[in-house]
Length: 110
Length: 113
View 1 (cartoon, rainbow over the protein chains, first blue to last red):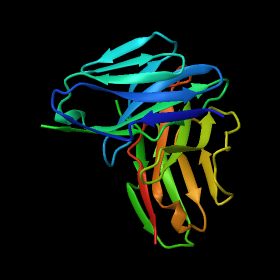
View 2: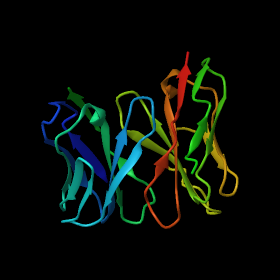
View 3: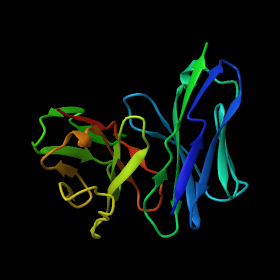
View 4: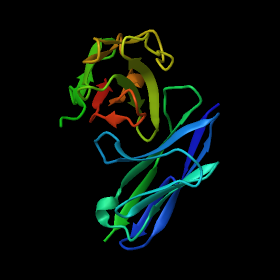
């Protein structure tokens, strides 16, 4: 059964303190790993798609990387406005569905 | 351009009543999804529409839940005889036919009293 596990559940950082969020997955034939950001009371906002091990993508202070078993979302010198829940999802095999993890709640304090 | 829109943004209903939630996808997006997000939990897939193909209803939790979509436009999710455990945020997402990046609406927060 396809499964996504995110860690930690919650992370508190000081402004400028870099860190990484983890997304471990079990899927039959990865067809894409997706990162989303969700602010309170809003729908998830698409960030990145990764397709193969070794692939990396960057956007501002965020960089997503992918191995055969996990993905990391690296946050460099975070700012308070980066505070949000970060969701990871995978698409496997011939399915059209995404399987989501439960997310990491990130709080960046000034 | 306009994103995915959902209405109402909030809905409070009494146990046992029926509710209808609406989703307007991004124009030109052929695929549409409904998800349920309970407090503190991940997104739970409910149903998927792609063009004129038969919908994938494998995530619907019971026969009280149903959804329709007219062509490649508006979709409605109907919950009959609502129960307290139906309280959640219901999210709609759409995507183009050539990509699996889903774009989400703001959600409808349903509270069953």
